[in-house]
Image (cartoon, rainbow, N blue to C red):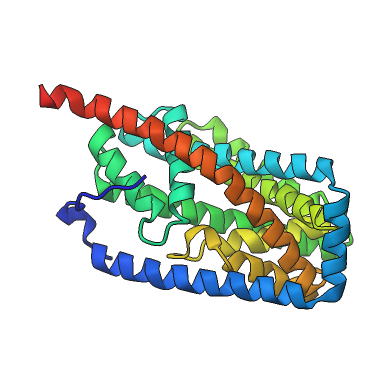
Length: 303
């Protein structure tokens, strides 16, 4: 959510507003350059162009439906993560958190306004939650994603080495179930379980994006691409991993196997196009809802 008012002094450390804005501009330029390079590389590859042309002539509606479902699932799962993390610090509704995440996702595509900054300002104004607290929950969510990605990655490598079934890494989800029995560990276990499922939702995203672009891949390859994409999304100051995700998945092709570099670029660009197409209406609807909530919260104080 966009917030034009200055953040309080508590938000000025360790990265003040000026530094954040500068890093965001650099990240936006880098992301634009990487996406442009990806489009250029795909355009130069005749085989990939032909594959895309065939896919466009006969769209794979199942893949499109799966891709949309994966994007919406990630929206809900991300919201669930932040909802669990924020609940001890203030009253935040689950629908409200979905509106915040949708707005932040759209905001992260805008170079001058990072979605996380608007989220911190909103929680401070509407829910009375300090900026530092919101920042800590964002860092906790990133750490949870990193841990979930590493554990699933380790499981995928062990499964590949043992020639185990492709679904073996999903057994990692069971690690968190015993911890949910204890009330003290339940929030942590819930966040880790949700983040792990979210990484696997990225596998559906990858599978569908590759298939939609005319280069089908297997479930094991999709999980490998999802792990790389999840890691790329953690790169700071580049909204939603723009450009980084595309090239990370493409350059990981020799390690993951099952696709070529430019096929990875084409698939990620196709997935990104659908991401943005969904982020725009969701983000605009979320922003409108948050504006109403903010006005309702401020109105009593103005009387």
